[in-house]
Amino acid sequence: MEYRFLADTGTRVSELCLGAMHFGGPTDESTSVAILNDFVEAGGNFIDTADVYNAGESENVVGRWLKTQDRDRLVIATKVFGNTGDGPNDGGLGRKHIVSAVEASLRRLQTDYIDLYYTHIFDDTVALEQTLSTLDSLVTAGKVRYLGASNVSGWQLQKAVDISRAHGWSRYVALQPLYNLLDRETEWELIPVSLNENIGVMPWSPLRAGWLGGRFTRGMQGPPEGSRIAQAAERGNLERWENYATDHTWNLLDELHAVAAESDRTPAQVAVRWLLQSSGVTAPIIGPRTIDHHTDNLGAAGWRLETAQLERLDAASRKPLPYPYYVHQQHTRHNRR
Image 1: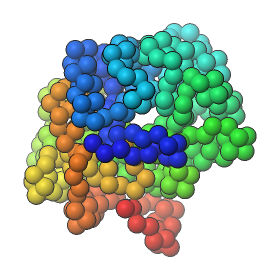
Image 2 (image 1 turned 135 degrees about the horizontal axis):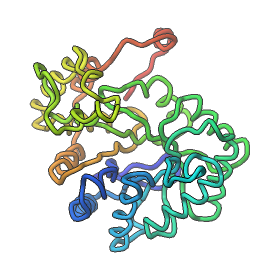
Image 3 (image 1 turned 180 degrees about the vertical axis):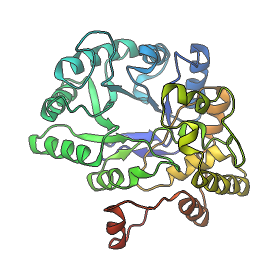
Image 4 (image 1 turned 30 degrees about the vertical axis):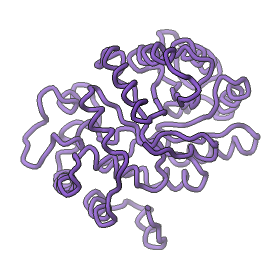
């Protein structure tokens, strides 16, 4: 596995990041540990979790495993925002919750420091200066090495960077957005901001909850039984069947499967590889639930899609731009790669 610099921090991370969202939940601890061990044996050093994943159990699983490893060889990321209890201040990005949350994450992860600490969602109930100054104090105290943001808009990310720069605070060096062949809206503003401000991009849901994993093909009348897409409607998730079962999706999947066959790779590997070769991307976050999923995902590393294949996937996945983005595109030459 290759390594890439995390923005301008000097820290190198593996080109694939292992997401632990399922650990301590759908994926039991023994399977989680097997996946973690295999990831490290394959050269991976970048692991992502969050305080709210499975009510903190994901951090607990990673923490127990982490005690058996050489801590300094690994880059551990977690997040803050979500409600971690039933109290009125058990969530958000105010100083009170952030300070409590980072201590709780450190205890669950059984470590003295967190390498990359993301704000999980933008919080418009708190002055951004308060959030950013609190995060800076965690870096100064040595509890956190670097800062990142997730689930933000372009203006929110840019404003946060500008405020931190003006005050001389540690700034966001990482962005974790939804980004994949079916969801390319991140390219409209977030990728340009990240490129201009030297922010590393770690896409979540590179397979869009399975849509790009190989099980979905033209002609299907509904999602496979027991799949995440089959359950999405009950949870109100955006990746549910009716939102993606469109001609655009089937045309893209036709091309994805064709490129996979040509490359002697799986559709999942091609979908993740497309991200790895996309401008601004540091490390897509693979989130395996099983060993088989994990093995398949690891196959995205160590090879490259040809330029013509990238162009075909780009063309099949591209959607008409809304205003004002199509105006900008008409007057700007921008090469994604």
